[in-house]
Amino acid sequence: MKNIGGTIRTLRQGKGITLPALAEKSKLSKGLISKLETSADSNPSLDTLYKIAEALDVPVSFMLETEKVQLKRVAPEEPPTWQKELVADLKEKGKKPDEDIINALYVLRNRKAAKNADTDTWKFLYQSIENSFKS
Image 1 (cartoon, rainbow, N blue to C red):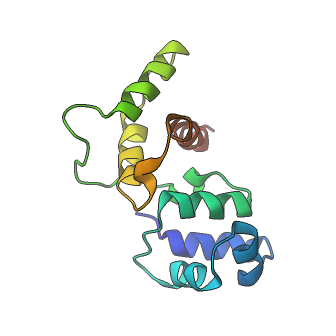
Image 2: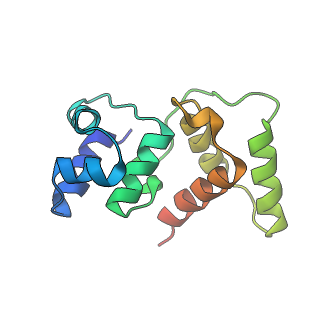
Image 3: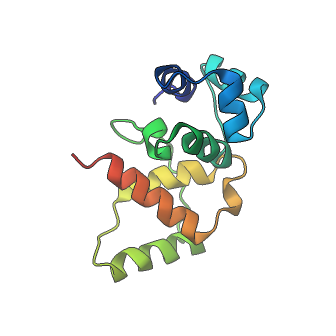
């Protein structure tokens, strides 16, 4: 899986943004961002990723991009409410839900603070991930 901390640092430096400036813009602490950038096993919450992505002006999916989602099956047998609502919305728009994206959302769901995300957030994340794979 992609090193999220390294991606954050590369994006930040590529845009000429200092660590303190990113912390201020994302409303996160310098210490947290520094820890994320330097730890090989960074595991930021969905909320933290969203704040950093917004501050860097990139979709969350860009930081999570992998060739294929790497995970153990964490999806429950019975789809949770957020998934049912997301799938219903996609079908209403004439789209077939992409299982790889749904699985990526489960990974995000199991990170700290992601459990409280509303349906609109899941729709946004799904679309961001979907858009990142379009050529």
